[in-house]
Length: 265
Image (cartoon, rainbow, N blue to C red; front, side):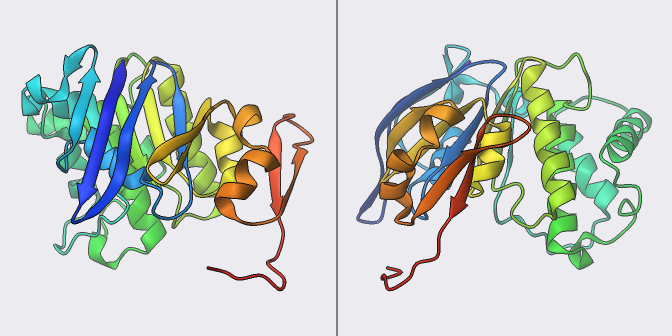
C-alpha cells in the first residue's frame, strides 16, 4: 500500500533521515517510536510531501508526486503535531475543511460533518471558537477533520492512509483511548495508519507493528513483543526499565525507573 524507498532528508547541514526504507500494508496500525530528534515527525512530513527528500514514496505502486493533489487529498491525511489556528472558525467549520476534496452540496457536507461530530462526541464543541479551545479539545477537533478528509466515519472506506503526529499528546486518558481506538478500527477495516507516539504503553496496546527509529534509521522493526524489550529499548532511551505483561492482554507494559546519580543528557 505504502512504500518508502531509500528516504534521505537533510535540514541545513544535518542529516535527519538516512537511506530509510519500509513498507506499510493495508490493515496495519504502525507506531513510530524513538527518542527526541530520531526523525519520526520528519519521516511523516516526507510521506506527506511537506519537505524535500531523496528517494521515493510510493502509494499503491505509484509515486506520490504522480497523483493529482485533489485526488491524493481524499486518500491521505495528516494530523500535525503543531496545528493551532489563528482564525475564529467554529469547530464544525474546521472539521468541514476536511471535506474540501469532495464534490458535494452544502447540505450533504453539513450532514457528513454532523455525523462525524456525533460519532466523535464533539457536540459540546461544535459551535465553539477553536482559538479558545484547550489543547486537548483542539486536538480532538483536528483529528475529526482528518476523519472527514478520509471519509473515515464510514464503515466501507478502504485503501486510505492516515498519518498521526503525536495525536494523544494533549489528551486525557479517556480521549487517548478513544482516539487510538478510532484509528485502530479504521486500520482494521482495510486502511493504513502510521502514528508517532511517545507513550510506550499506548504503543503496546494499539500497534500491530512498531518502527523504532534511532538517529534517522530504523533500529528495530517488529510487533510490540519483539520491540518492547529492555535490551532493545534501554540503549535508545537511556533509562532503566522493567517490562511485565499486561494482566488482561498479555502484551508488554513498561515501567521506567528514575535516573538516580546519572546524567540527564
